[in-house]
Image 1: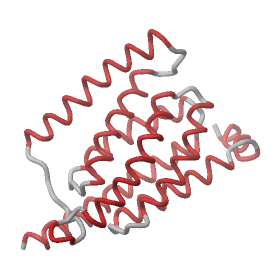
Image 2: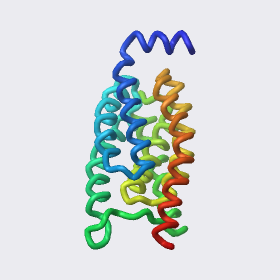
Image 3: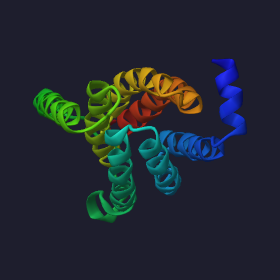
Length: 199
């Protein structure tokens, strides 16, 4: 694995390293509820789109297009999505909203797994589909500042690490390991913000 990592660093992984740097910037800025997170997301997703096409993770590639659009939506929501033209506040979802979200993720995962298995040469279509549809729902939660997004990301990112290791995207796997650590800080920061606004 170390030899492969060194080989990647010498080869075409400069793009991956740049994408990773902007992805880390995105998450750190999101933890702080800083609007700049969405600009970092746009740069990272544009680079990752090309990377995932190259390694035949087609659902992950499609997800990057979605992420780019959500970066625009998130920027708009965080600046103008609150009440009385105030910035959007952290909120929570009800159990029924979570039930719908999880149901959509499961149904979409099975449908796209079947399509990818039947009509493409996709690698690990079940995991590729799960991480993609989970990320679609969870990115919407981030854009709406839903507190529980951090819990969803913990599950999705844990699965994604295996997916990226299988494709020898070691820098990206490392990025997602870092994400898992940052998730706990994100949860604590957003929970504090939520408690302050309801106090």
